[in-house]
Length: 514
Image 1 (cartoon, helix red, strand yellow):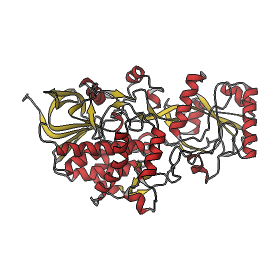
Image 2 (cartoon, rainbow, N blue to C red):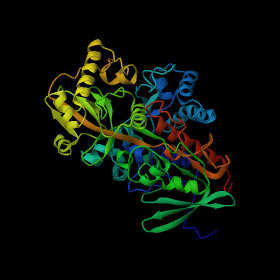
Image 3 (cartoon, one colour):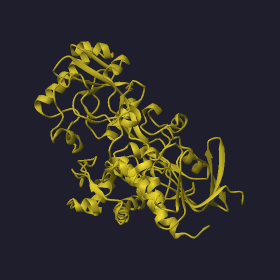
Image 4 (cartoon, rainbow, N blue to C red):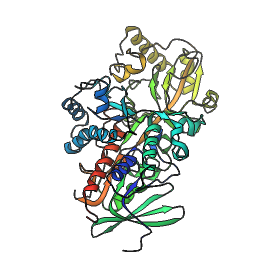
């Protein structure tokens, strides 16, 4: 076919950490790269994130004094993930992370540092209290120059109107640094407002793509390969319903462009999928605009269901906590919202250290009925619609545990992660200082984690387990290497970057048209 509107060696779909990693690697290996982003700014979900990567035994951790071994890291990862995903895929991630950091740090633009963050299954052998987590070093915003307008802002700036930061850190630093690096490469083109709609096959291999730009479509010939790293389908209510993903669109933290279009194009091209009912979950603080937002660092109060009963350790790692919410909904008929009940020690503010999205005006939560208060526990029960005697008994039982210093029901504080926000102590303060308060919670997610199946080189597999030549995937467009588990902070971004990097390396080894 000759009616092409554009050509490239490698088409990268998506501009989060995975897409950026794949584009950078392909360009550094000498290929002509076109990166497309469906929305009007680069960064995807990664731009909102902490920007962490879970990479065992990498150079940054070693500089910080880590004595971890790959044998221990592999044993931990295997114990958490199990056989839900192939061992070859797990090994590609585990070994690929440290190799990727070596690759990036050979470029002086990239420098990573350890960021202690406990592994999420702290009682599994070889879990580390400091974790295996790194971030990119921060840098002054002014270095971005005009590229700052092309970088998707962090949530405080985008949704709360906060002042732009003078220093870029976390996910902003990661995407910002990649933007700078790519903008200086003559063999890279970056395009926003360009969405993949279809893949074109010729003689059994991917030969091109159809993209939508506004109301027009364009056909791009691809000589070497397409890397899909366009996130999941968490912002598509119809797809969530089709695949049975718990939660609602309003509970997702992803940007609006994560509709699953690129993923669907891969499925239409014959790709096999897995884990399509899964996501990276968390408890979600309900917001006045109807959203349920990712919440970390709960250090007080208790969660109660519609019967006024506790159902979980409130300080568990967020994905594990979100899964307990889902389990309670499925097995106990728990309804949403559930409530965080707490006392007045912080003047009525919920005991949440890191709400991710900064709190709105407290009056807005109260006007929406999401934060409620009363002089006694029994009166609070009435205003949140749960049985007063049950709530009073639940609070009394928890207060007894607090006095004892041990949660006899849910072992709150037993995990390494649970003690990170409280100076090493379990968060077992009694609920005793009136008036008493409750904040409404739902289910939030950091994106879906179901996607196309790939091999250890990130090559997409068809429904017969065969490679689809010229098609690669990473990130939340790929079925998660960690299966149904979330081993540690930085696992989603880390795996996205590794498999996009592996995809680009594999493409660079292939001849044109092969």
